Image (cartoon, rainbow, N blue to C red; front, side):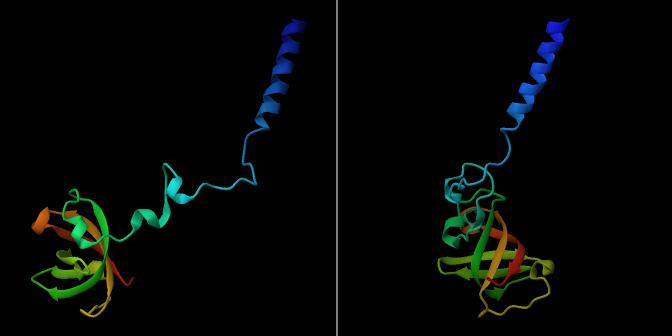
Length: 130
């Protein structure tokens, strides 16, 4: 019985000592963001994409474009242009967040890609100034 109590006491103290080793160790430097394997990587993940590259994106892929809304088509459809080409965007009124833009205003649009090739469109969820 004494051996059992002695062994239990030793185990309690040894667990306490090993637990003191965990936690945060200061003085270490974090790896650069581009070398991380998982998790949030900062602006690298949300960089703008040129129109010329989204023509083959997967359906529903989320992209951000910077350029100009150059023409209102019918309904909620607009023609959008960047340095690499033009695309039709569908932007409902809430996406504008009560702001008005002209063709000379540079804007950033974010939304989901639909279609392939020349039939590619962008369903915009947000329009803002860059």
